[in-house]
Image 1: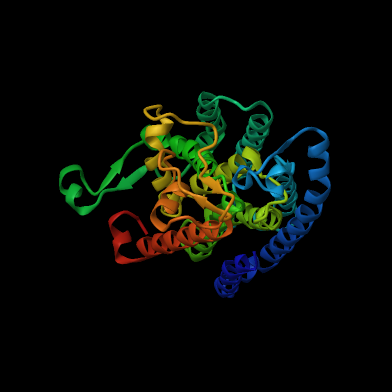
Image 2: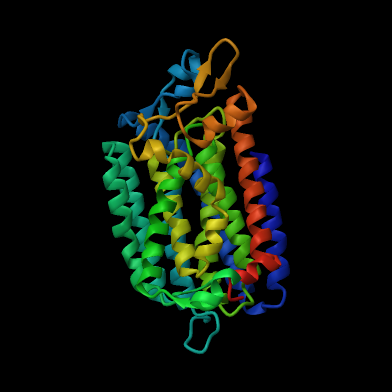
Length: 387
């Protein structure tokens, strides 16, 4: 888990460099960072107490990847994603009160205006998905509800979205359809589908200790770096809004990762995966960088496409698409009939220890985010981006 501090150190250094020429944001960002540290400490402490309560309430699971061992028979508290989600919401709301009342930067003449309706729409969508995730953990909802309800949750985002609905076509198509194409309502349909994808993509790339929170933490750091790089752009205030949501998310997720890392003391549940996915959808849509966000979701896109035969019912899809645990060697072995990135990685590398497999998948996430930055900030970006 100590390795998780490396991307955080990179983010911190880039933040100091970017803010040196924007003194008006020094105090708000300092308060935001302090609040995120407090969020980490509170989440870390609360998990210790809440996990006992979830056990008493009968919310627990067994670690299938350790079946046949003492650890595989232990009851692991479930749905602990409710803790970082709740702390995140509290911090974001309290910071909203500060920014709109005391910071003095949200006046009508300020270039750092963060629209109140967008802030509230983001809160509404995220809280709705936390509720859905917790309901899924308790009631085990059917997949059709997991597709329908995130669509409803995304409506406040789409109604409050006031950004561009155009796309820039690459050169081969520009001569036919024009360089800039106005999509109108179709662009909002795309953003609605993005919300559904984000909330479910992390949920289906899961099953080993630390993977759900680890990938979310890495994506969040990538998003924050992108926001920092774009603060001086024309859409700087939109990226500032994203920073307001992502910083506390990183703090709470890092605390959860401490308890969910191998060997896991708690399970995050669908509560966390839906909360994380909608947080990314919120900042991507209202931060006006939905296309860039997809560049950070390359592993999730690969996993989704590879899983489609099972997700669509062409191949039998059990509730848990996990690898097989070899008790004799203490390693995970691929199940070729289970179509997901976890089993694909084991097929390519051979049997691995669960912790090593998680590190490998998270390293792949880091590499894909780095590739996303290369695409976004290289000459290739001129084909697809206005700026």
